[in-house]
Length: 503
Image (tube, rainbow, N blue to C red; front, side):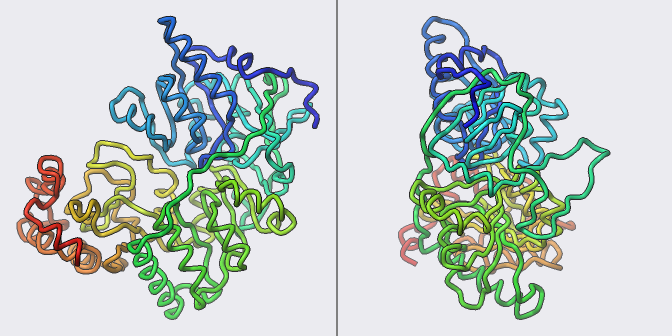
């Protein structure tokens, strides 16, 4: 490995270059590919500064979720003042919802342009995990690409954490291209999930590199729960619908690229796609490549996968590293401005399947905020795929908290994907095809097919009590279910939950 041109630093020596109030951009996307020993040393330094009564907080950028060593460790050290564009850490989430940390939740493909245009101000330092850096500034990234190429370009100074755990052959999967500023952008020559038109490395001005820190640690991915009965029922609805679309020739027999979010519902859909003999082998055009993708690729059901990170458990990543001759021709890792680019999503005709917290009776979907106030993680890439895909599908359970919450509501208090983008809504109760339907037809389709029977009468009464217009709403009562839950612990306080749970 050719690192001798750059000083070798301890983690403590590295973080001495980070000052209070700095904007620091970390690599990381899908909780992988992020530096590990440097942010832990930074959290320790922040604690020492606070014990001395001195202020120490930084502004944190990443590609997307960056994992426990950045968001969780720094949040526990109370070292974050501002965060963008996405997070998935329990402690940081609480600090954001108490407004102790300013959080900018945004579409992931917008991040590189926003940073390079200077809208976030100066990036003082980039901390990037890699498998190698060459003297002339070629940086071979590890398990995520994310926004790292942009951060290496825009940051005033750079620290590189070389992680010896990861296979140097990761570069064979990588395709890095950055976008020129408008109005000088040319169309991407991307006609297939596996198209490559860039480089296997990111670049940095060697003069900006402060030094190299060594590590040898795997990524830490929390195991996901297996799909439950509700997730499996949602998956059955989706598979039946897709088969009908193939039969009606609205989807070609060879199928279309698929994008699936993460979580139990998404895993259930992927598993169902893999098991169904009437769904042909397909390609994945995704944000992250996670464990179910590797399993289906080994089975021959997924023939190619594009994403911005290998967001894999330790066991799955070891399987990939042990069979690189098999996986390299089947996987491409890209910057997030390419993996989530609207033009590419639309050109490839992606079928997008994403989860929501709740959907209102007209098809507006909330995927990020509880009761319109408390962020869970963020919008991530779901909005970009829902808005631009050939067939956008939104999935959620019909009820939550044992029936205390209906996930089909009169009006969503926060909207990430609106009714103009959402075409299909699926719950464990059924599927509503909203294509070509006006507002009242949409409302009836969602109530009849997607709402839990215990809430259907309430939702129809809401429509009857609403002011007549193109879209019917009762502004006095549109959030009554949410207010009931906050005040009484259930959206319908008189509902027999014992009977509901047994039905």
